[in-house]
Image 1 (tube, rainbow, N blue to C red):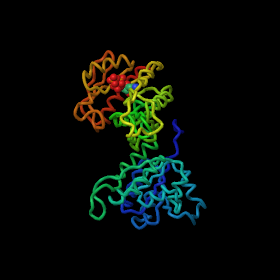
Image 2: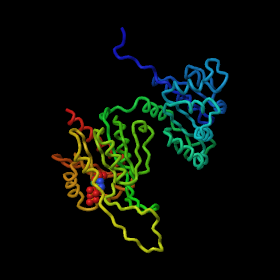
Image 3: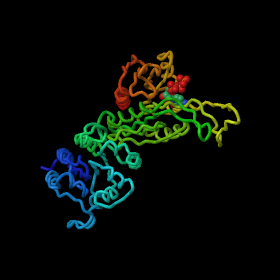
Amino acid sequence: MPSATPEREPFRIVLGVAGGVAAYKSAELIRRLRARGYEVEPVMTREARRFIGASTLAALAGRPVRTELFDDPTTPIPHTRLGQGADCVVVAPATAHLIARYALGLADDLLTATLLATRAPVVLCPAMHTEMWENPSVRENLATLARRGVLVLGPADGPLAGGDEGPGRLVEPEAICALVARVLEGYRGPLTGRRVLVSAGGTREAIDPVRVLTNRSSGRQGVALAEAAARLGAAVTLVTAGAHEVAPDVAPAVTVVRVESAAEMGEALARAFDHADALVMAAAVSDFTLEARAEKIKRRDGAPTLTLRASPDLLAGLAAGRRPGQVIVGFAAETSDVEANAARKLEEKGVDLLVVNDVTAPGAGFDHETNEVVILARDVAPERVPLAAKGAVAQVILARVAALLDRGAR
Ligand code: CTP
């Protein structure tokens, strides 16, 4: 009998293996990817063949291993076929040499040519000695690739070949497999089908071409909220004035818009707000701005007087124009009368939830890895979230958002 749900073709993964000791782990990786039902096309560099036998990888993948750009009897253009046919290209291990060639856009073997010929998501798992990993040229090459949308996973910290210890180990095959699964299949959860808009970081107001007026917000809590929303299944837009990147497992589900000033943040939020089901406003928006001078203020002219003017309350403005069913979460950074101030903001800003943190409490607030908050809402008792990692705090907040969205949708 024909099955009721049409079966999709299995996902096809090109697994690039470069020449490093960790190449031995690619055998285990192929086994795991195949166990998830994916097809795996192994592509080894010539150097990788010194570290693990091609027959091992071919046997596990159930297909031949390719290395050469030319003389393939089955196709004259193997890189195009592999690149176009891939749903995901994974390189594990990615050596310093492979990373450099990819960053430069070289196509001098089958693996690098395939990397250039693909439009599929690419996951690079670096592995090398700590000294190489810490070399600025390696870091800059990876930063270039990350900027172009390549997902970088690892390296891990631990024992290395030759008895050394430190960052540079290939991440475990299980973690690589989990990331590939996320990239291909996405996360599913209570926010699947929802669009969540998150703001993060402290905005910067230009004083002159070299100086800015800003605040201590790092953007960590906002990034953690974007990640948590994506892991619950949401499609996320993150408007951020901070420098932190989102984790690679959620990168495909998060559109990042980088802004600097409160005005830029306002424009970016206004563009995305209409399509959003929820707004989570974790950014520390500058309350005051000023007319930036075109030229640097010179010391010899003496201390300047800066005239500040109030910038609009973005959150209150968005909340005032919301459509029915949209859920809005505000934040409050307080240093005194914490809950009384926050309760006032809940009303004044017209939000559904107000997450308050006492930024003077130890381990909480600006630039910490952890946070301690109270979630206020109308008609229910405040929810205290004890000191925890910002990711854990984000999960509690997003669970409340999901519950409110479900209530609104009914
Ligand atoms: N907020 C905003 N636009 C601003 C200032 C704040 O959208 N110009 C948002 C923040 O993102 C946050 C909430 O409003 O979600 C509360 O921010 P907070 O700085 O605590 O409150 P303010 O309204 O600025 O009040 P005050 O600084 O006087 O405490």
